[in-house]
Image 1: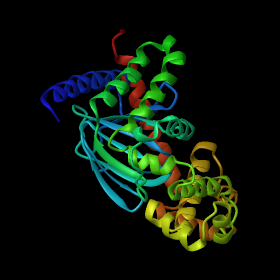
Image 2: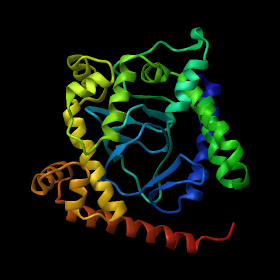
Image 3: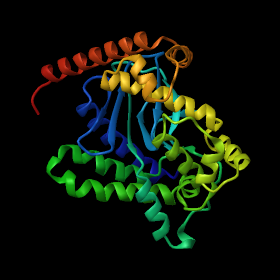
Image 4: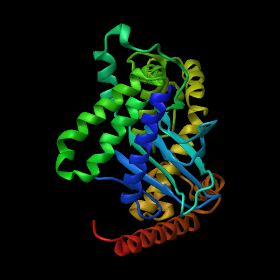
Length: 320
């Protein structure tokens, strides 16, 4: 990166850091007033975070983290951007955060419709070459992309402007991703008729019919692929076979039902298609390390503690 660009990135990073620290006075993952934009602050070392994440673009503002997304491991550092174009299970470890120097990042969820529309609107020569079989990528964030991220974050201090300006900046961010170094992967995912796009359609069908037993022949027919081709390209893109992916999708959805909607384990298991609660409990423990009730209680306790920490920090902060 040229010297001028390095200075621009340094200035943007300092401004983003100031905004994040001001709006996140304690650790947590917090959706912001800007729809789709989420702020992250981590202070605890040696803790892992597991989730089934939607497609997103994330920028590291301070610190670094190691993420296992699908079957691949990624090391993401300050001022780098991670783009995940597929719903994927992930495990992340933040590298050496402290209360004095917390890990800071912000991300926004990708809008499939915006990406598809932009790909169609772009002149053929302006489109990046499609990259098949790649659902996740990491690269240094382009200064122009960081500037747009900063403009989006600055709207947190201009709440009356959010409704009009945020959608405009969001569309610009999607466009900058498409024409940037990670655009080839997104192009392959969101170009209608491509094999990666067929896998995206297959994943959408799995999510819509999560409680229905997965039948490979029916799924392949719905996305106009052969069973062997579906299996091969699905594994290439996600790192999992369709059956493995479907099982994880069910377990994460059951976890969400218990945590967010207070469903009992047995009801959550039935809601996502398990016929045997015993099998559900066994597979849940294998995935998350603890039985459902113990895992959910631990997560709720952590959430309450984090909320109390943020609340105390907010009450003790001076008026601005």
